[in-house]
Structure formats: C-alpha cells, structure tokens
Image (cartoon, rainbow, N blue to C red; front, side):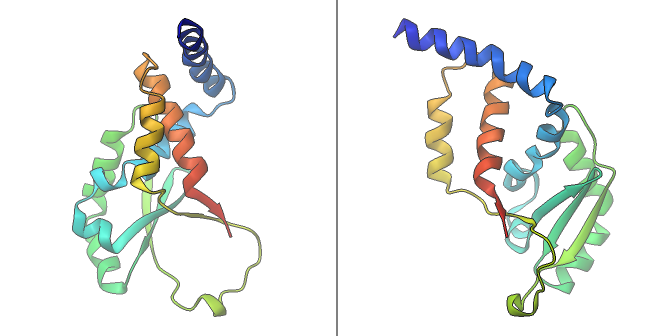
Length: 156
C-alpha cells in the first residue's frame, strides 16, 4: 500500500508541474467551465444550451432555439460574471451564442472540429474515487478536469 501511496505522491507533484511547463494551466482553468456547467447555470438554462468551445477566451454556447438565444443574450453580463468568478487563473472576454444545427445531413464538413459530449456521471464519480487519495486539491482537480476533457471532447 505504501508503494501505491508513493506513486500517488509522485503523480501529485508531477501533474501540476507538467501542466505548468506545457502551458496548460490557463486552458485547463478556462475549460473547467465545461466540467462545472451544471453548477454554474440553473437547470432550465442547462436543459436548453451547452458550452461548445472556447476560442481566444470567448466561450461559444450552443443554444436550442432562437428564443433561448435571445434570452441568454440579455443575460450575457450576468453569465460572464458567474463564469469568471469560477475561474482561478484566467478570465473569459466574452460569450457567443449560436443555434444548434438541426439538419446534420446539410452540414458540410470542411475540417475536423471538436464537439462536447458530457461523460456519464457514474464514470466521473468512479474516476474521482480513484484520485481521491491525492492530497493536493489543485492537482486532483487538474487531473479530474484533464480526464473529463479527454472523455468529453470528441472530434467530428
């Protein structure tokens, strides 16, 4: 058991340093919005939209229909403040709302892109249980975010 603990201690020290050296701290912080989406927005908003991507510190949100798009545009300042308050190392510059594509067969694929697919809650809980013994909360959170994004970001 002590050998496992030593491996976790090494991982505990290695992950934050590796993320920092690779310049991943800020992108991981920004993308924590994806993993915390359901906590950041209310249930009704979450049911009608989802985060799509972050480009140049602007969060793109895919919205179910034009009614919700307009409603969210009125709430941009409030939502931006909520999202930025949840971030530790960076800040979003803005929000962009786009309508969800309904006719997938009409969509012309020019280049591969990523889409967000929320992993099952039970898989997330199982992974969080696996890393629960890592004492450094920041390292543990970074590892969970890294796992989450590796599961959630799918190429099209």
